[in-house]
Length: 138
Image 1 (cartoon, rainbow, N blue to C red):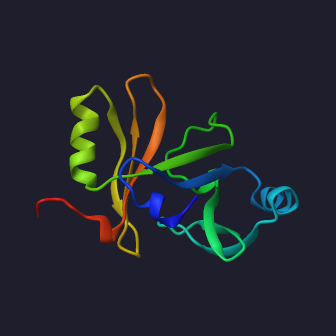
Image 2: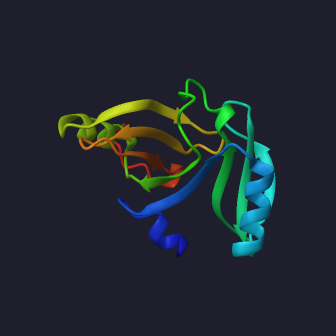
């Protein structure tokens, strides 16, 4: 996926694995996809792993236990983030069209802003506004 498409409103911009075994996941994806890893911290202070294909960041990994208020029955899973031009506008559209906000907007150290929403059918997804993409009327 080119960097250009990831910055386009509505495009899938990031994948994130939430797992019960970070070490096992790293071993698996290194063998299967050739990924390399860079350890860092999540926005809530837990472990976060940046995955790379070559020199390009392609996804993240985090432990299920580091996700606040996550019900214990939630299994390991991959989550997707979609780029939005304006997080505030997107969140208003979610609610106006029968969806709900399940994690309010949160600002990362890099300046990006994300939130998690649920569509009317119950599927969850992340919305991501990159700092250079902001087109909100501020």
